[in-house]
Image (cartoon, rainbow, N blue to C red; front, side, top):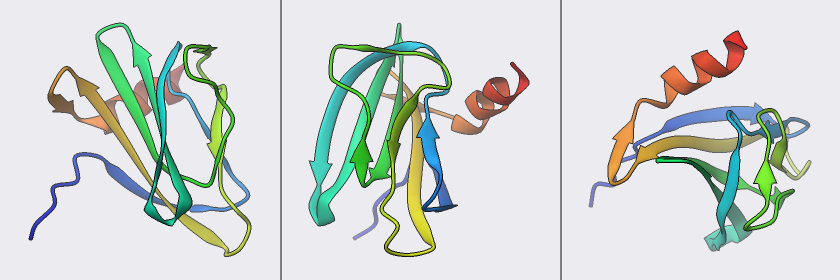
Length: 105
């Protein structure tokens, strides 16, 4: 069975916090197997997905600003696996372009 990953995979230090790339409203928070969280933020017609979090720092229905902390990781190991995705409707977009825009501002 093949699973398509439509995002960017990161191996990040567990001391890092995950920050929102653009102003939006938290659309959904859900927990996955192995007690990891997925946070979806709505930015008008676009959605960003933050997958693989151990802790969530946002609340569904509440706004989150660009640079606001979405979540974090446990310090049980040195690194954590994290996936970032961007969607417009049912179309997956290149998340790299959003990260480049985020870092330029």
